[in-house]
Length: 214
Image (cartoon, rainbow, N blue to C red; front, side):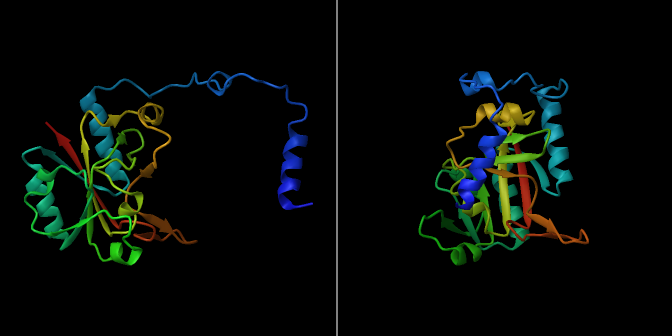
């Protein structure tokens, strides 16, 4: 008997006395939980997002559409970025003030090529205020998942309040589960057995979030 057969056998025995329920999944699973915690205005929800992003050690900026291009240019210059990965669908005006070499999001790019890119600039699908989480879904302004996992510096632009959801249940209602979802809560970090925090092990060491209004 294989390990697979043994595990499935244990599952069958554990479920032997469970009544059969042929209800569709969406009716069988009760979803009477709260969709959010408290009532907030859109501005208060954005403020909560900024607070929780900062709590995860992301660097938060606020800008209007007119302020965005020089802000991105300044952030890239401060990081010393010369090569910047830019998804194909990123609005061209966002990068219009940056004097950098733009690298395209190509399927054939190797991890070594991506590692030579200092920064990546993307949009996002949804930002979750209660958890300080950014969700990317591979849309044209976000690119392939790997481009936000290899470069050391990620600038993510969130359109507020339109792309901000108060809670995880509300965010899930906006997302397509068939898309490649990447959930980001702060820069990449881990800790050893003594709880010494190390950043940049599994992804960008620096996450900068621009809350774009206008």
